[in-house]
Image (cartoon, rainbow, N blue to C red; front, side, top):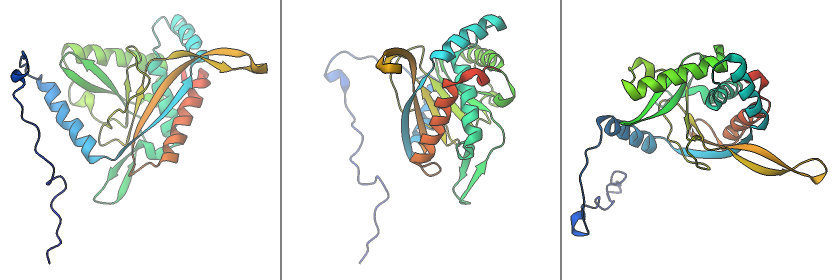
Length: 252
């Protein structure tokens, strides 16, 4: 008796092939080349990595006040993203498995001793991920300047392969647009990615039961469940949350 099973997905129904013009007016628009390439990589990553997303939020009330003061002192803008990147470095140092890549064939994790962070950049032709190297050795103002330069170049001329390679961990920030959380797709061969959405003022219980308003930022950590389990992800996120709540060390 042949008990061999068909390949995974072989028994799924075919993709719908419809004449949409039968239902109303339509127009065909070509996908930009960059978006087609990126879509293929995103599909591969989504299908090949068992994703789990952990949600949390960080109190950035003090951070925002310090950030504005630091921007004035430095004479250049220190962005919230740059400080979140510094918090991510602190978490990667405290939880080395999040700063790894998985070698499936060898059954090994490759633990990285450097901290190059990717930043998702929205361009007119599609998404690019620029990499800021050695974020552990740079101040928040320096990181902010490099992110701004990469973003400007990505939207104008595009980025070179070298400028998009070697990342350990990626951050995708939608904070300037909105949202309360999402599931970012891991940027292989990394094992985790942090999504950031729009901060909001929220009432909290203060001393003596008084209501205090605190500025909270939602965070979404997607992780590769082959490398990190739920407790690993929760601890990693708590390190980020605690770093952002006591941000003085992140501004240097």
